[in-house]
Length: 442
Image 1 (tube, rainbow, N blue to C red):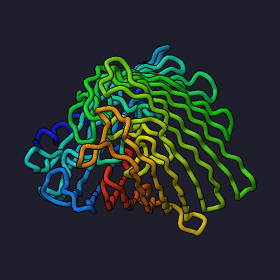
Image 2: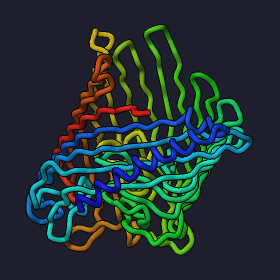
Image 3: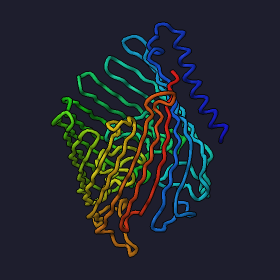
Image 4: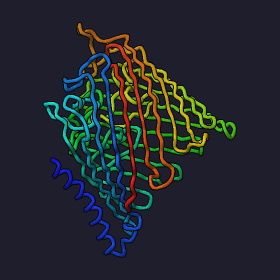
């Protein structure tokens, strides 16, 4: 496996080099070369999750999951050939290497998702991803076909693990009107953080695997003014759901030092077609108000799921723009109401540029699975639907980004989370240590 992985990684870099060499030999395609870039991100990731109620990890061998690994993420992005319609190429190669994760500590087949694990609980020593997309540009419209990384409130690739998630299909983006970005796409496969295969089927976070042929989306973001932004999107996971999203955010400077801000996010999710995830009709929303004063930012948010089922989204993606969706908990269970208080501190004002801190506390209650469908239902030991459930989560984070010198842009990040819940969820303590260093080679 190791030789194959290395070959894949080397092959993608060779692909980028070959594409560049071909473009150089064609003077009419000078834009292809001039606007090309090749970057490599080094990511060192340590992840420890402690199951506080004494549960075993999904491998059944330990009460905690732990992994330490190193990743290299190479991305080549070409410019466009000259002409009315320009053509280009994007390619990526990603390599993950295990540094330490003893058997039974890997958290295999769970939301831990750091390294691949076989049925015996043995952790892979390495794995890789290799992919690319061709692209075309006509005026202010860009079309990509292949392995893509969409960024919308209804379909957003995830990047919270060792390697990022990707999708296979086509995407379209238009920026013809000032302040307006329109996006759409149709995807027929995905690759989760643990998978080397770019042709995996769709998996949702709470409903599990879904035998859906495609996932489509369309919508746009509008920057109405310097202070006001609006978003409107829809998506369909064929034979599973239709999702609709609306978002608005506004900030209002009060003085040079003091700024207020507010935002609102709303999703509606309804079963579609063959109802592969059961029958449901969910409305969930979050609202936030806050204030920034110099180095300090304080925000209060409230979130409600008014539906009878969990609000679901594609597994390990960032396709959930709700204010109370945080490090571990989404606070998206049936009938759940949650509050969160968050504080951020930017140490630039105190003479330490690049250093920042964040802390937040969220609490949810009123969770009721009485009317959940068969896919999302959760029951107690006697087989009765869980009701009256509640939970809380506290997160603390520190991050430092080197501002100058040979190590400029090196980032060090520490994330700690504590969650406590009643019967429907786990009690967890987790720590994530992430060191990233980006290199620009072209």
